[in-house]
Image (cartoon, rainbow, N blue to C red; front, side):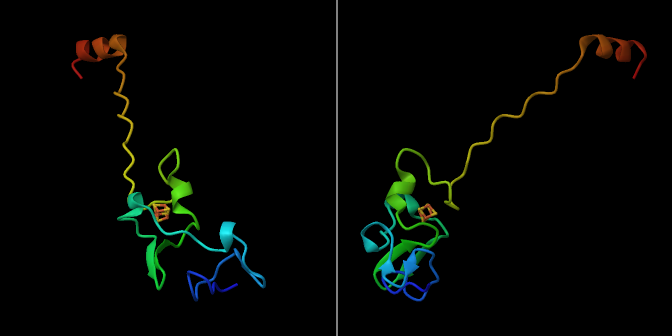
Length: 95
Ligand code: SF4
């Protein structure tokens, strides 16, 4: 149903005939670590996440898995292993 509490006019699975079924009957505002995320949206009540109702819970203990601004460090690429025997044969053959 369409939210009538915080994210007014937005379709939400938590909204029902009896109102918002989320904890406390409403969504919670973004936290500092959400700054820069594309999912932050301004509503009349303030800035909220369009992907989750409780950003603070998303960030508790780990990085939010839905954040668009989180740059994950790539694991260093494994160096290509060279078989010393084959390399020596290639060198001897002049390749
Ligand atoms: S997706 Fe995560 S980081 Fe982005 S606004 Fe929502 S809770 Fe914050």
